[in-house]
Amino acid sequence: MSHNKYLISFIFVFLFSSKIFAGGGWPQPKGHGYFKLFQWWVVADQHFTDNGKIDPNVTNGIFNTGIYGEYGFTKRITGIAYVPFYSRAYFNNLVSGTTGELIDPGEAINSFGDSKIGIKYGLTLNKPIALSATLRFGLPLGNAAGGTGGRLQTGDGEFNQLLQIDAGAGYKLGKLNAYANIYAGFNNRTNGFSDEFHYGFETGTNLFKNKLTAIVRLYGIKSLKNGTLSGEVNSTSIFANNSEHLTFSPELAFNVNKKWGFSATYATALYGRIIFANPSYSVGVFVNI
Image (tube, rainbow, N blue to C red; front, side):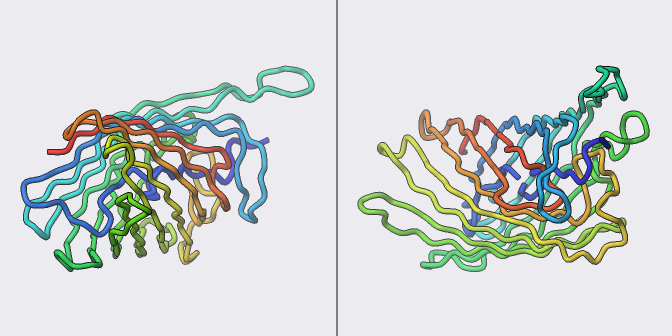
């Protein structure tokens, strides 16, 4: 069995697969911000192939520790940064199922991870529908060819640019305050990777006198399949070309006080091509300023 054929992580869907990004159609007010220290991980022993079927693979994992932040420079302009300052990728030993012999030893690498920076611009302010446009840059700061034969990666080695439009609105869920947001975006990728269409929907509400926020997300990526790399390029890594998915991801955020809180997120692909079939997880501590 080949190592981790047709795999990609949920992280950078910006999905990031666990979707770490917040904000929706609403920019941060001037001088206000949201910062989160997070741990995200996925351990996978199966994957969706390029025709959507599920196949087993040698157990693979990636763990990312990082910081996500939003800060309002003006009432319309919000800066965004996603920085996984520690990323660990590994795969287990490949052992013969009949003889028990070691076919290929496992490996691991530790490095900085691919990062994201961006600017969100509020197209509407104090309107029933909050519209915003986001330009986000993917910085290839991770290791694109680690381990023996370059089979382990904490980045894909390509610089990409995503333009995204968000539309959000508040509403009442019984007596509860709630919100909903939809978005669509185009991700221009380089180095032979196919461009992508990003889309998603989320809704959330505050519970127990704003102590608990419950959020449900549904988001996905559609490959335009216009790149020059095949889907098998870097197949032993967690970054692959022409990957697609539709992911369901609930999140719970507990507010300890008006500033501090912690959150937990679960994400699983309802449909996929060239993507893990195992769920990803994320926990974090956040502060509002």
